[in-house]
Structures are given as C-alpha cells and as structure tokens.
Length: 108
Image (cartoon, rainbow, N blue to C red):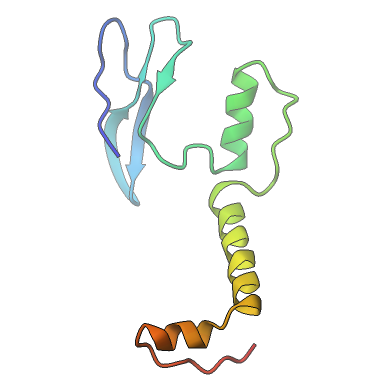
C-alpha cells in the first residue's frame, strides 16, 4: 500500500471514479511523459479478464491469451483446492486440539 508521488515530467495515470463502492473523483498512479513507464499502488488492477485483455492489446499484444478466470476467482479456487488437499492429508482436528480449539464436526 502506498501513495504515488508524481516526479519529474510524469503525470497522473488513472482516474478513479469509485472506491470501496462509493463515488469518488481522484487520480492514481503516474506515467512517464512518453507513456512507456506506468506505476500504481492499485491492487487487483488485472483481476478482471476484460481489463487484462484490453491492457495487453494496448501493449500491442491483442492475440495474447487471457484465461476466463483470473485474479480473485482463480486464487480462491486454488485456495479451496489447497484446503481440501490439506484436510485430506492432515489431522486437522488433532492440530486444532493442540492449539486449544475444540474439534468441529465435519460433514464431508
């Protein structure tokens, strides 16, 4: 997390119109005068496949393949798969008891 400070001949890059579900009017990021260098502290900028595809197209890579699942959706599915694997191969109830939590009844 941070705040972008424009230096030299740079200028702001992104116009922010919504933040945390509320309407706002602010700028974020910085880009060089020639547009070849850009930076932002905005997290999740490329989590939406359409945004990523448009960005790649703007870089001259319109044929770049973008998976239909990116960012948060893909990450959450990977975390769920990891949790299932861990639960299948570890004594989760035993571990929880070791740290002072009562075992839960599992229905799966």
